[in-house]
Length: 377
Image (tube, rainbow, N blue to C red):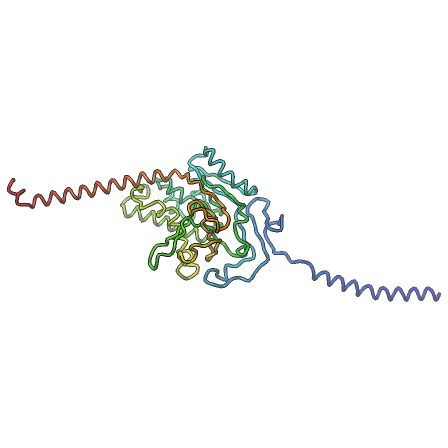
């Protein structure tokens, strides 16, 4: 009996010691569970993740303190940056050349989970009408009336990425590096609305001058409903309407001879100017070449990530070796340049003919006023 009592007493003591010890261990271990950043995608690796539908490539890093200075407004800081994983191309027809197939194929070879779409002139027109007719019929009216293919092609690239987000790549561009690695780690917690690269990298020319540098528009990245692309589209549409009005024609009556240069109307120059205006609105100050000239690495200005010349236009910038990796190669096969050059030559010839006619009439008028001419009549 005494033995049983001793055993019972020992058991009670043991239980009394085990329960608090177990409770302590449980509480301690629960405080060591790691906290994960919530994300709409399912992580597949420590660095990147993709959705099952292929809608985005996400890059997540631990949150950091938001920057608060002229280049990065506090409100733009977010814990997760998402790169769109849709690549857009366009062509007159779908029978593209072997070179173009090789170049466009590089995008999915480097980014096998990406969705790639090639739109023909016909499908592009249907896309614009489907996405903009209800909300911006003025855009549809201008787009469908444009008679010059390169103007329509420029406007379409802005419209398609604005509508659905993604990466625009001309048929003569090839991807050299996984898009998920384009954004440096220090910017992956920032709110990036658009990614552009320098085509021409020039110094600021002084107060009141037009921006000297130029971003290329053969490749760029933007999110759906991009704030910057909305301003680019409005700027281009207004420019086209202005040209038509100045020449007393409708949009359908615009000719290449009426343009100073395609790049200033729908191309990379007007895109660059519109982005400067857009960033100026965001930051509440003038934005110009001084914000990014001669940058050696990607630089975030407002919500636009600006890549150095080597990234998208290495050849154009002399193949620099101190500006990081080449991300995209441009093979300069654009067929519009020949048509544009021919139009400029026609415009030059017309201007010379007009000057010659003016000089002829001026000379004839002087002859009529001379005494000798009067005596012979």
